[in-house]
Image 1 (cartoon, rainbow, N blue to C red):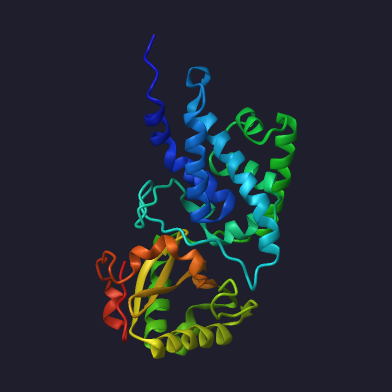
Image 2 (tube, rainbow, N blue to C red):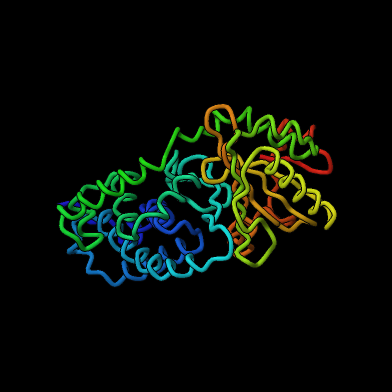
Length: 320
C-alpha cells in the first residue's frame, strides 16, 4: 500500500487550480486569494484519511467558499457606481504570472469578455459552468461541490452554456494573433495619434471604465471609434499633466494591455479586446481597490524588458 501524500503537499500541488476556480467564479484577485486561504484552513481540519480524491475535495471546498462570497457580492455589484469590470489578472506562461500569482487559466476563459458574460449567470450556474467547461470536472464531482443532484447540475450547465453561447460572437484573438494590432494601438495611444488609433478600432468598439466611484472615469459605456479614441487620448493627456507618465505594455486576462503609472504609482490597467483585425473593446480599470495585486508595477517594482514599441512612445516607456 502506497503512502498517502502529505496534506500540505497536496494543497500546494493544487493551489494554482484552486485560485483559478475562485477567480473564474468571482472575477476578483483579492477575493480569490482570500477564498484559497480560507479553504486551506478548512483543509487542515479535514480527516484526510477519508479523502479519496484530494483534487475534487479541494475543488469542492473552494467552490463552496467562492459561492458564499459571490452571493454576498451580487447586491454590492448591483449598486456599483459605473461599469463593473473584473480585477485585472496578469497572464503569461501557464502556472506563472508576472505578478507572482500562480494560476492555470488560459484562453478565452480568462478574458474580460467571458467574465462579463458569466456575470449574467446565477452564482450556481457560474460555478457549474466554470467547473465543467473551463476545468473539465465530472458531473459527480460538480454535484458534490454545489450540493445539487447530477441531473440538476447537467440542467444548470446546459442553461449556462446556452446563455454564454448566445452572448458570445467571434472568439477573442489570442495575444499572439493580436500582437500587430496591439502594437499599432500602443504606438498611436502613446504618441497622441487620433487617426492612427481610430484605424485600429472597430466601428462598434466600446470603452468600459471602472473607477468604482473612487476615481473619475466614464460612468457609462462609450461607443464608436472617434469617441473612444478621443476619450483614451484625453485620459492619457490628463495623466501627463498630473505627473511623469510611464506606460508599460503587458498582458492581462489573456489580452494585451497598457499599465499607466503617474509619478511611479499605478493609475490604471487598460486591456484591449481584439476580434478579427480590429479592437472591439477597451477595458480600463482605475478603481484603486482593484489594482492592489499589481503594485509590483510601481516604481519600486521590477522592470521588464522594453518592447520594440518603446522607441515610438513619447514621454512614456512601453515594457513587456
